[in-house]
Image 1: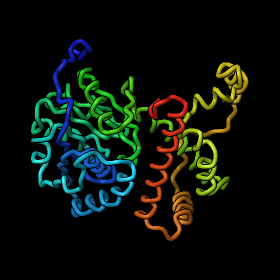
Image 2: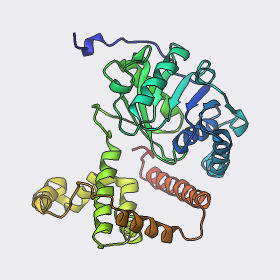
Image 3: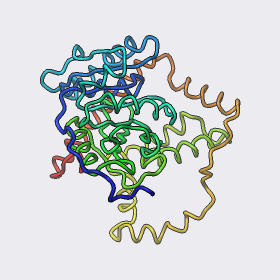
Image 4: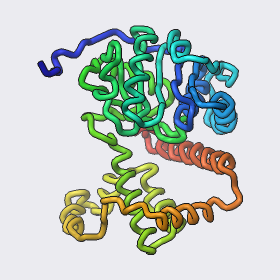
Length: 331
C-alpha cells in the first residue's frame, strides 16, 4: 500500500540543543562545526578521511576571526570541539545531528541507517544535501519521522540561509522543530514546500552557472568579466532585495503587473541556453585559467578571510539600514 500523508507520525523531538554532531568535516561540515561552536555548543565530529581532524581544526581557526566580529555566544570556544573515531561515538549523545557527506545516494542510505540506529530516538537528524531527495536516502533510516534536509550555503558559519524540508515519512512537527533550532543558531531557515531535486536556491544558481559557462565557452566574456557583471550590478541589489522585488521597482509606480506586461514578451527571445554546454578540455582550461588570473597570488585561505570580512560587513550594513526603516534583517 502506498504511503500517505495521514500515515505520518507526530513525534516529540529535542528542540533545545546543547551537543551538536557533525558527520563529515569537509568544507560544509566544518562550516557547520564553526557555526555550532560560535553558538556556544559542544560539538562532536567524525570524518573517515585521512587528516580530516587536522583540516577541520584549521578550517575552524580560519573562520574564527570572522565569527568573533559577528559576535560569539557566551562560552563559545574551539576547545569544545571533539573529534571521535566512529559514527556511533559521534551521534550517541548528540541532541542534533547534521550529516554533510558526499552527494552519493547509496552512501547516504548507508550512513543514515547507522546514524539513525545509534542516535537518541528524539534527536533530529539532518542532511546538508544540495539536491538529493530525503524520501530516497532516508529509506532505511530508523524513525524516519525525525529526519529532514537542512541545506546550507557556503560559508555555513556566516551565510544565514538554510533550506529545510522533510520526506514522505517526516513528521510535520520535526520540520517545525528544525526551523526553530536553525533560528537559534542564527540562521534564516526557508521551508521548501515540495520535494524537488535541487530545492530552490541551487536551481536558480544552476541556471546562472550554465549560462555563464556558455558565455565563456563562446568567447563572449572571461570568468572575471562575468563575475564583474554580477558583483557590480545585480549582485548588489540581490543582497538586500532579491529578484522579484527588484523587478517590481523596475515596473515603476504600476509595479510588477506593468513590468510583466512590458518585459514579459522578452522572455520568448532566444537569449539564454539553460542546457549546460559540453565540458570539453578547452572549456575547462579556459575556466581554470580565468579563475587563476582572478585569484592572483592570494591563497585560498586568504581569499576565505577576505570573503568572510566582506560578508560580515555587508550583513551588518544591511541590518543597520533595515533597522532605520523599521525592519528586521530577516524581513
